[in-house]
Length: 305
Image (cartoon, rainbow, N blue to C red):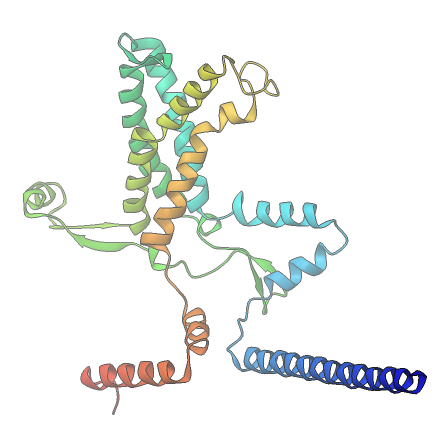
């Protein structure tokens, strides 16, 4: 019996050792396959066209001694608060609407607008809306004149430093538009032309100003209803006489959501480098199909000899 037990024990040990060797071999194969996949990804990344903008590297090296939280805050500050008019204009429109609505409501307010905000009046709402559209268009036109407001912060190879001097995109360059037939008569009487030359950004600014003056104030109405539901006057007391941060930025959240959707839908355009990276991520047969379709299109338009 003892010999049988010894043989069984030896057999079990041998089988367990073989199983452990099999497992270790499988683990080695998995590790090797993962390493191969990483090498393929690195080789593909090297083969992709690289950008010439060294701004991220410069900012990372300059701010390397700061904590991640402060580094993130500073980078967001550089690329938002001092960024192009696409950020300054929407924020300013909400401020203009609040100020002008208060002014018109204070001097001319007679008709209550909504029960959630008893101090809001129709006169203030309408006056603030008209003022926001006019001042928003004027502010957009002025900002388009200066490259400081339309150029991102980039690293200049020639100057060896950060610069905001660039060739403005078509969004910030004057374009000629044909007026509707109903307005061509008036335009000819004023300047003898049937066309209008303006910055395309001003047209987008018109949409933003209309939203900020008509829909934007409802962010404040929603906040007022929320406070009344919990029977509180303000969200905080950090700002004397105004309440908390949320009390001052209630309309900004609604405006920020709209601006994000608007830019993604109507303004944002993909660069050739990003499109090419997306093409490389497709399957080989999809890349071949895309190539054949693009080649046929270029040949039909006579762009390929």
